[in-house]
Image (cartoon, rainbow over the protein chains, first blue to last red):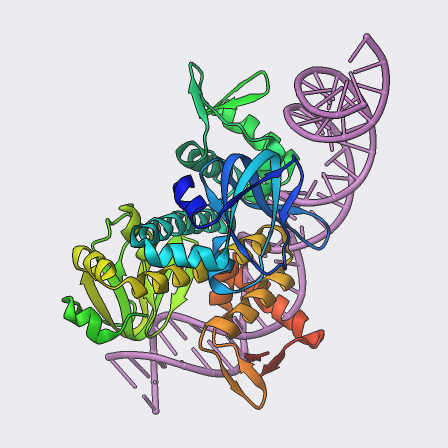
Length: 198
Length: 198
DNA sequence: CTTGTTTTATGATTTTAATCATAAAATGGA
DNA sequence: TCCATTTTATGATTAAAATCATAAAACAAG
């Protein structure tokens, strides 16, 4: 999102998070702007009986956790490293100073938030009113456009586990497995040794 | 959100929308920034079998429909006047010019988008993993904080119909009615001649 | 290479909200 | 004021996804 050297000019420091390590927790008050150098971070909630809902998955060059930072509100979800990752941390005050002094960055932040809001709007409508096949397909098609899925001779490889798809769509693993099978039967996607292609 | 005189300085014009009139439709390409002078506008989707999902309800001084405007993407939902309303329309080019020349407004836009993203995040987690009582209560408590619910001697009057609560939470009217009854029995809210108080 | 964990898989059963049916009360236009 | 529509309401039934149980395949860590 923001150029690394610009962030460092304002005092951002790199921090390493091992796989499964927590970056911040639900309920914490935000203190920093976070931007991934490399790796993969997920933001998720756990409900009363430990069921997970994944708010989003973020990859290199992407930022996360800004909304509560701007609002002085508690984090609504946890951020956890899905794999070994390096993240740039910039203290809030320095970040706000950076924004003030670089107006082009504000537009970038706006576009980024707008993009995430757009995704949430589309998925919210899907999750509330559509059946599993529709929901899973929408998530996959969104993933192709915005996550880093790679294309090969079989099509786009959907690099999510069935559990992750479930946690992103609010469905159970078994339902996702059965739904993906049904979608394959309909010919809208392929399963080649357990991997899903679209 | 943005001062009316500033908007008008950049060429914004007022437009009247009668109750139930459409402001814009899902699939349209955005051309203007919209800000409500007075009235009430809802944004919502209809799924394949005409079931509605309300993305949000907006009141005076609030703006709506910005995300796709910034992204040059189609509107993901319809905007309809819930009651007679007056809306300020500013063409996209003028709006972007306004933003460039008034950096403080960018921060306001960021905060507004952050707020809406925060709401969507919380509701998405609720809708995917929580039971009806939890979902309805979360919506009501959010409404108290961010919609214009009025407080009197009985508590906050929840000025949503049961149908609207259903369309905002992804539940059916009958389920909402039964859920509200159950919540009343538990003492977490009151029903005084069919009106809900919290 | 072995072992523990995660991922994918399938069948049977249960639960819960949706659906269907019906109606009284309230509201809003004409 | 009357009539059509919307809102709230309740009971019975159904459908669909969750849950439960179990296991093979794949993967990761030591």
